[in-house]
Image (cartoon, rainbow, N blue to C red; front, side, top):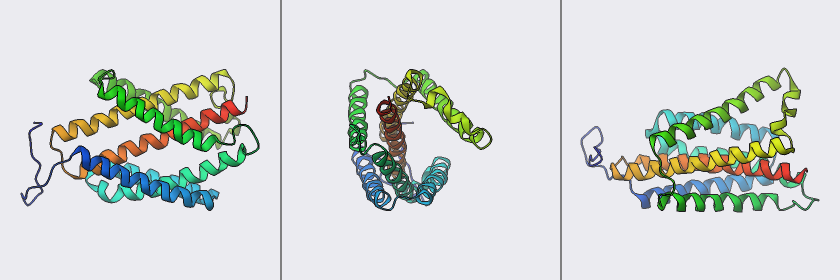
Length: 237
């Protein structure tokens, strides 16, 4: 029941999840990500990027499986993703440093937060409603995209040319694909907002503030990287 008040195993009262608390936890996670991203930017290397990717993936899976661990795993996830984001960002910045897309990184950051603001507005005004059908479609599309990426990565070990598929190139198909992925990533933000709203209404445990912040951070990182990918395709045209 939404009116349920959660208690710990000892039966002691535990303050429930709040919007203010969730915003605060999300802010902490973003600050951690920015700090480690700055380090990744200055110390960019392939081992650092791979470390951020692998550690972040492990921590993300652990957090999803055990949301109770979020107060511990979410900050470390943010730190790992910061290393990944910082390293990837400097690669893109270097790649287009001498072109009209030299500001590709700040432009991608700005675009990410613009999308966040737009999606929040659409959610709060109920222009977008998270129904069961909406949730199933978005989750299904997200799973399809992730499977496509994983299949490409797996095949690339045996067929390196798989990265030459049209969806990864700067042609019309590649651009349309990137726009579609960005739309799906943006719609995932609505699912994140719904986690916060339903959690607060149900008086979910306090650790869900960290989990909701983690979920939002996952989507924002994905959205940012996809926007970077789209801009890089446009830059190569």
